[in-house]
Image (cartoon, rainbow, N blue to C red):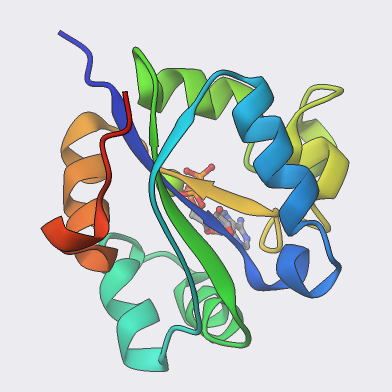
Length: 142
Ligand code: ATP
Ligand code: MG
């Protein structure tokens, strides 16, 4: 059974360019509820830990530098089949290949500065949500 939660980050360039409000509006318009949210800046160590699964990839060091370069917005999103649904809303990793109307097409700058993160599996959604949020920071508003 597919889970109903995913973890997103609005990445530093999108925050710096003032797209936070528009991206949150897209998230609500797509039918997600926000269960938890915070505005923070990752340290280099925290960015390394978050992206540890990618540590063998050639872009890892650049990605860590970028993700710790400025404030981000992290949020837990809820909807049926959340991981897959949200990846549909954000579009392909490279904004140049993302479908019209997707978050990355609209607000992404390049393959690294691609506006948002979305979890890639239910297991990772849980791991990533636990990375940012305690139980006291989550709200199930029905
Ligand atoms: P995310 O995990 O951020 O939702 P994704 O699942 O579409 O993105 P991944 O393959 O998990 O893509 O890569 C993680 C992140 O690493 C990408 O979002 C992007 O910021 C960066 N990245 C991926 N591929 C490249 C690349 N070829 N060059 C530079 N940066 C890259
Ligand atoms: Mg990924």
